Length: 205
Image 1 (cartoon, rainbow, N blue to C red):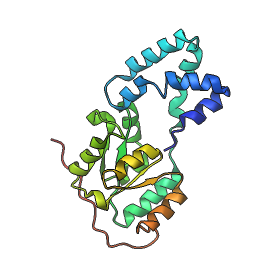
Image 2: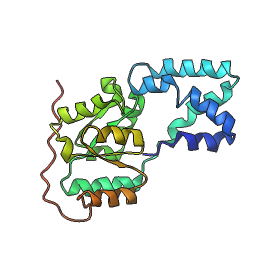
Image 3: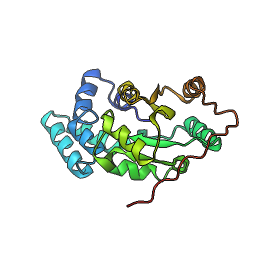
Image 4: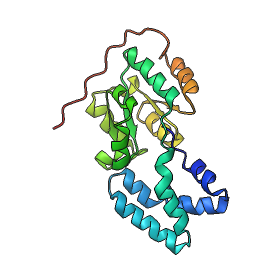
């Protein structure tokens, strides 16, 4: 899905100095990271960010961000189509996402969710990328071999962290570029494959 906080701020405020200050209060704040790690509630995080906005005389702008930012979470339809093709050819698809509880619940209602064989949300385990442990949790939980996995992320730091765990990493820049990169790794989404089905998600304990 789309998540471009810098572009969101440009569209709303069109003032680089203001955008930088607001980014530090919201998307780049400690509270935002704690939300992803599941260590703070949305209410508590928003209250703290609003207090910072008041202190910096940006209360109105911070309220706009907190009210409207969900609107940027648009589904990338071309990526969903690529997921669908990969799934139909027998490849296992797993999510590994830095995501807070409220957004996690929202995304589970989207139609692309059915294509996942499982995954790890950061809020579930109080770990966020690029911490190497979150990659290990995913591999261990689903009995995956690092050398047989390909990790896709738009953040180069997260891709590098995966590579350090012997996982092939691809930086996401768009569905077409991803399809080409996957082909270079021997994963052709346009041809039939004899890949064995992904293991079923384990039953909750």
